[in-house]
Length: 194
Picture (tube, helix red, strand yellow):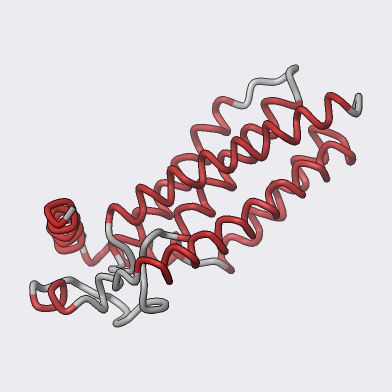
């Protein structure tokens, strides 16, 4: 296990140190929360437009539930593992981790709530649309929203808020939870004949 932790530290440090300073604005934008509220509101409108208000609201409920679950589970894991963020880890600081804003977020990093929420939202909206509207193909939307989620996740490494493993685990957790909730809601909607 110690070897994996060291590898994760070294890969994260390499990625962080090879990030062009000119991209820091992009990483700050991607890492923001308030900046993406218009996207969330827009997608809520798309869900109602494409699925109707009953199905749309049901899918929205699963998205909100997904955000609450990923946030709480990520916080439980952070407080359970107590892994310091790269910008707070003495070894990372000693080896030159670049913290563009100084210290970001709380003390602990495993796993990334940003990554799990982004991928949960991306997977949940795509699966919610695809499963409940068989007349349209949402493949292009799926590709675009997954790229958005990946950029948000990578931003956390570039800003020294998370290790690469934090982001990978968070992304996988978000995808699994997002799809599971969307699929469960789809089955409930079919059973209710909506």
